[in-house]
Length: 330
Image (cartoon, rainbow, N blue to C red; front, side, top):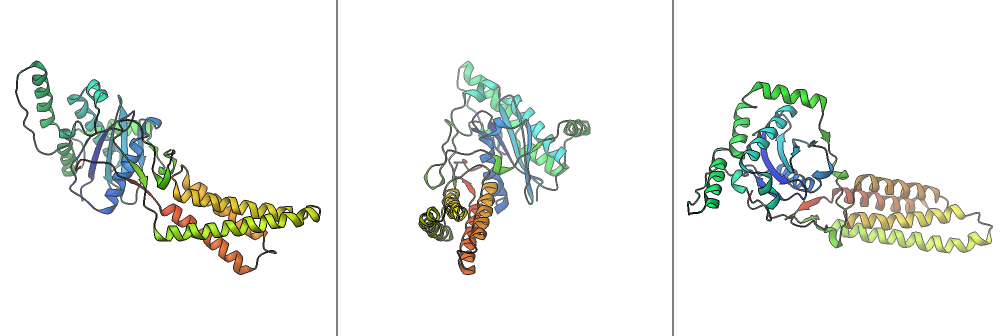
């Protein structure tokens, strides 16, 4: 397996894809990492210049410079310093061929796709100084492409100049890259069925995976649990007022469990930042509330409510983001 599998160049301010390498590998984890890579690209402006996202077998690395971000998916056996060497070489190659004006004026996804292709493209020589300039720029692209750079690193295992690797290693010690947690990527503004509001000219459409049959079942069971909690809580309020508020904590437990069930339904249907932390917090509160109601519910009832909460938490965590972008065959 190649050490460097995919490279991606995006505009920093809005995540607009500028160029990408051609795919020759199509296994599942690579496709998942590419989806995560495109998701992260929308919020790169919030992160430092260097960052990493750790995976099981594949890692994501990125650097940002002069309004452009350079991202790559690499095998975990590739040293971090060599991954960032590749990104620095990629940055140099791209800035040699395209200036900041061309990047800022781009209004469609992958305007510089030829930068990542492995085959050369012929360019017309029809008259005009503008065509001549475009021809010069495309000639530069033919010589320096992402595919050639990937091939160099995959065959030789690193950059041609050892001094470059040493410099990057030293810089990483002084300024280590930030490790990014995908749950911290703020992709709020969810709409129905997990759609997310997109920025202008992003060219991307990110949404949650479709609701599954187990997910629908968990929603129904959560609604049942919420209904039982609110009915018992409201019914108990009447007796609490008559008994000088002796059962006030039982009322609080019922109502709090009701609110947590509703929140679990919301977390499953809509994307939220820090989803993992929120889902475990809701599960903990539901368990504690049911333990407080041990005298009002038999063990089977407690087991039912806690089991529904656990299943809902599992399904919330398993429903991932998908990227329905038009990747133009790359």
